[in-house]
Every structure is written in structure tokens, then in C-alpha cells.
Length: 135
Image 1 (tube, rainbow, N blue to C red):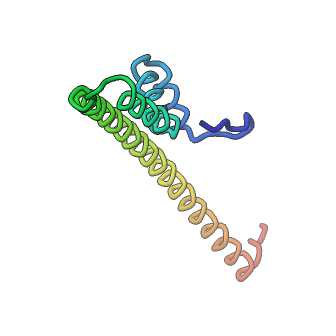
Image 2 (cartoon, helix red, strand yellow):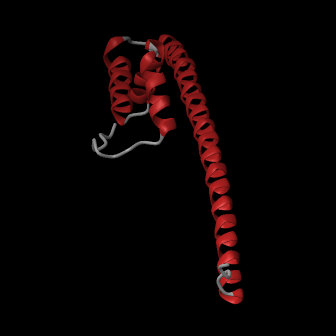
């Protein structure tokens, strides 16, 4: 997990998403498990544990080892799905936010373009026709 510099601003959706994840204990646990299960430390520990089990723990480890590995695969696949759902929800929230910001920027730019056109037209009218005559 990388540490971001404190001066760096984050996208509002990232901030809201992080706050939501930190507010719920079960999501914090799921994030921690997913983070650990996706690390090389997890792979190394499992390789060592399974090798130790097969070599030293039981003379015939295959039935119980198969059961344990199968159960672990079920749980890990569930955590992968949780992670994918989390990423999809985050991506959707960010896309919605970006769309709304883009629409606001488009409206602002359109209004500015109209104002510039009106000012240019008025300036052209004054230059071509001259200043209004005072009475």
C-alpha cells in the first residue's frame, strides 16, 4: 500500500469511497483480507505451509489437504468478487462524478462563448457605426 503525499488532493469520489470503506468494519476486514491474499507474502506462506504439511505433518496429507485447499479457494474467490464489486462501484461513482463535472464545464464554456460572441458583436457594431451621438 503506497502512502500519498499530504499535499496531494484526491478526487472527491476517492475521498467518499475511502470514507465509506473505513466506516464499516466488515468492509475494512474484507479489504485487509483481499489486500493480503493478493500479495506475494500470501503465496510464500502458503507454499511453505503446504510443503511443510505434505512433508512433515501427515503421512498421507492428500484427502485433508485437498479439502482445506478447496475451502480456501471458495473463500478467496468470494473475496475476489468482493474486490471486483468494490472496484466496479467506485468506477461507476467516479464516472458519474466526472460526467456531471464535464456537463457543468460544457455549460459554462457555452455560456462564456455566447457572452464573448455578444461582446464581439457589440464591439464590432460600435467600431463600424461609431459611438452613439450625444444629444
